[in-house]
Figure 1 (cartoon, one colour):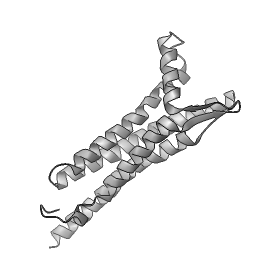
Figure 2: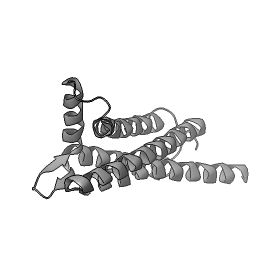
Figure 3: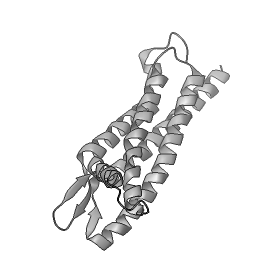
Length: 171
């Protein structure tokens, strides 16, 4: 990109996708139920994470894998904040290919690593829920889709950057 780029040339679709996905992740974590039980109890991600933290502070069995896995839900808003921060770093300041490349790689890593960890966590919670009569609800799936979207936004940005480099090299 050039210093005198028009707003159309400065539009970064990967960053937009990553930012929207991050907001979806935050909304899903704080407002949409992660689990539903047959007893009509719904719990959001923050409620599950807080319950695990309270159980840990009250000296509950520290070897309980469910409490440990639920406490790991705090990585969900962390991933969204990392992605939003990366997007702000990417769009702030003068346009630079090295900045865009670094941010897109950070988004891909954030999306990839956190999607894998969240997938493992959700599989574990689903297996525990079948025993206890509860099922994963929309928030858990929406969060996973949002985190994958963060990584996809980084990948799209990296592809766009590679296209710009090849276009500039042919000039």
